[in-house]
Length: 132
Ligand SMILES: [Cu+2]
Figure 1 (cartoon, rainbow, N blue to C red):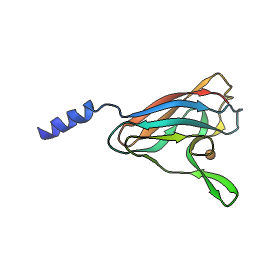
Figure 2 (cartoon, rainbow, N blue to C red):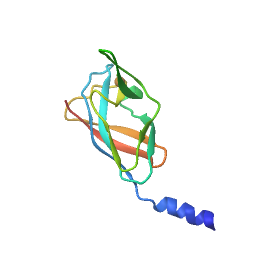
Figure 3 (cartoon, rainbow, N blue to C red):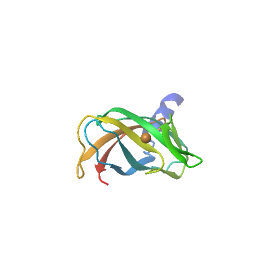
Figure 4 (spheres, rainbow, N blue to C red):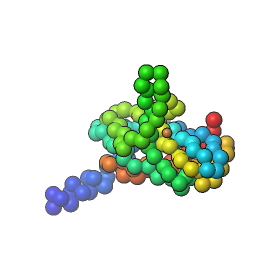
């Protein structure tokens, strides 16, 4: 009985993660580009972004930017933790979703779908506007 009640409470939990202002830089077929957005965690518990998928490119990765001395680079990152009551920004020069080897041209004015996978919230599909 207790199990059923806790399961129902789990189902009734409001969606505490909101992904906003998603956009993608335009790119040509076969090239790479990046997607950016804000992850707003309105809940009382942290949530972890652990996977990302999109049909826009052959490879989709979570990336972070780093700096060593004057050199800037980017690398794959396995997870991004969004603390409770906090917004985490994927933005140019910071974290981004790397879209590697675009299947088709993505021109300005179009939009593309990206699905984000969170440990607590589950999956969230977003539509990102293509712009500069
Ligand atoms: Cu990157």
